[in-house]
Image 1 (cartoon, rainbow over the protein chains, first blue to last red):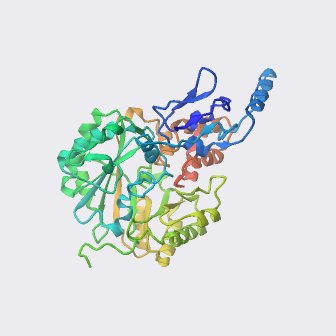
Image 2: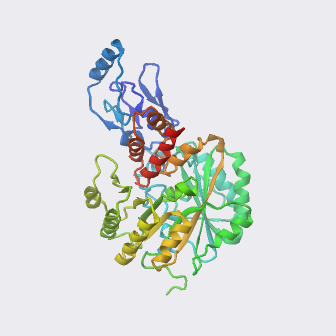
Image 3: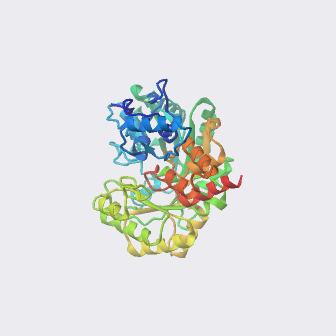
Length: 273
Length: 209
């Protein structure tokens, strides 16, 4: 069962239209809200955020009719579903991937991680995922707030594949690839739409310009928006190895970013001690 | 939480936006981590974060989530976060976390120079850093700058462009205060990384236009 709006309860207030990150809910010809199932990414934001006021639908309609007749307006709260018309989904594969990649409360089965399903540098102090000389590149398709289909994800993954990246094995997008040599993904998932999905690769610092050039070229061939992040393990003095390579390639680094403080234990040691 | 990487805005706005969060590593330190996460949240709460919560339990901005409920309900591996609006407080939080020696990975998203300063003032050196290289591809699909700044306060994209515009309208029409509108938007962000104070300040600018 996919996310639905119970038409016997819906009073067409429209609160769920604005809440929906994909703009997938609209008013139907009968004056009740309807979900565009092709565009819905099953994030359940509408269901989670809109408080169910639990009113009896005929009562709400009657009150509205009276107010309309009297030319009065009722200023309704914007974060409620007055009649609890939203029905949560119970999904089957491959549609279940929509929720896994869009609803941050859902944990990815393959990695055991919620959100977009990857630890990336957040646990680098204990995993050693990125070591001296490594660069981590994350390409998040659909972010910010626009969504993407796995067809777009595959297109970017296949463009990067000739550079011989190491697609991160504990990443849910990698786990959906049928071939990590080519970046090809499972055929049955290509039309599934998600809020965002992260391609995560590990490479060497000196290859950063090649990756950025490839991404620059592919960006004109995709309908999706994507966010790019780049990470590395700091040198003992705290300097950031990837900065030099990004700047030399002609790109600008954000003033803000994410810092792993190195407080995890046991601390990963490259010398194995 | 790549979720917090791409927060947009000028340095002025970003200087009131620091997210501190814990992440546990599978097969390394996830098992038995619940008491450590509990302690992390307790330390953060002492310093009055503008938002606090866990992706598995939600944010304290939500009606059905209390701080006590959050702490008692969380389980091993629950990624948890708190948001602070100034470096001085972040320094104090960090000092206590170092003292507590929780042994779980702690990350901070924010202005990198400021976070580095916090590390040095507490006698540690940062381990790894991730930068954003911004938005690529079909950028014509992106909304106006002020909407984008609020939207990226929840990187999972739970705060829709249309809700942000609606909140701006409601604030302009004086139907909601900037604070009320910021809290409604903050309830959409399950991971509790939405900075309600920064959103409030961005909405106050709407009133000036």
